Length: 495
Image 1 (cartoon, rainbow, N blue to C red):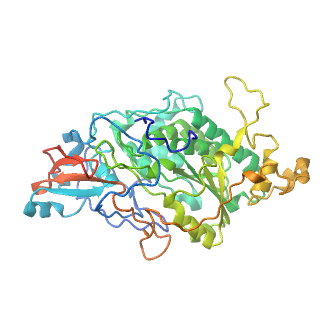
Image 2: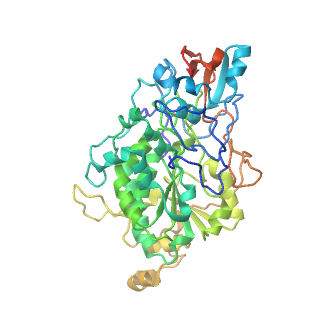
């Protein structure tokens, strides 16, 4: 299985928008905040976060069709809830996430409350229930960033990171700043360093090849949107390689947690590694640069509903078909780790079917089809140059394999080999995945909200949720990750 694939259960893991309402034209308006007036102390978070999603209480477990759970530990995440973790603003924050529950509990006694995990983290700390458990990483950390400097340290400030990644122009409304917003927590910043590993290096080289060999030589790059659906750290690396020719739009919509089902702290650490390079490249892009949406394939990892995982899963947010059409997008390239993934991930199925029905064609591009030329000589400190099909003439093969892109006249004139190839003689023709989006039943089916397609989607029952126990007066008395285990006792609350 590829390094970029969702890991097997046997593998032990390493384990926003600036404040203000979202301007997205298609995510539902979050409406007025339910936060009590004056609540502002400790590691409290602001911003719309999960805008465009709603959550329903979970009547039972629903298993993800994807890979085995990522996080594991010997003790429950709720083993002990610290006073620092639970008290937010003292008496001023005298309410839990679900409004009015304090009054209900006062009448009926202690209750179990099923609540959205992200909202719980925003109110009570990113590492709620695991304040003394450090983050761990599956790839090495480094003191230097991709430009061999320590300038990454300035991007621990969420405003600097937002400035580096927030896109300008028409694609700004589709930027999801949630993960960056988690940097408001000092205790998280203190544990973060850049990471860099082999799969990131390969992903960067593949993205760079797509940018320099294809987008730079295409007459119409702005007609095709690119959706990169690799594991988080590799999506960021792939985007960094593409950043000189594509407008990056990150879609990471959760907070890290030491026992998170989604290891989003690694995505954030990869962003630290590439932030300065990406900021410099994006600053010089023309307005018509094609959009590149960066997704984390870990976002819908399997959750076993055990007490040693924190369910920080979320759904991908991509623009609706009508908005892409308005922006002049006619095609989509969906980048997957390798040819083993035959269709889009489940939470994208309805979106991709909508694209097809709107006349937007979608093609799968396995990232693994870009490989180094085996005949090139590379220094020990250099990255090998990647090519489509592993050959310097691979760009010719790509233009025939993915005719969404038309080669520019300049490219054709300086590449005589192009005129000697046809779709029938293209050496890579048989390797292009046969794919057309088709409706299928998934755990995310029929979860549209807002009365129209493309307005938003709700999370399914039991997805991205956690359980707390609330006593008289709205006091948190215990927490747990799963909905099947016992509670850790807290004895402290919001007020």
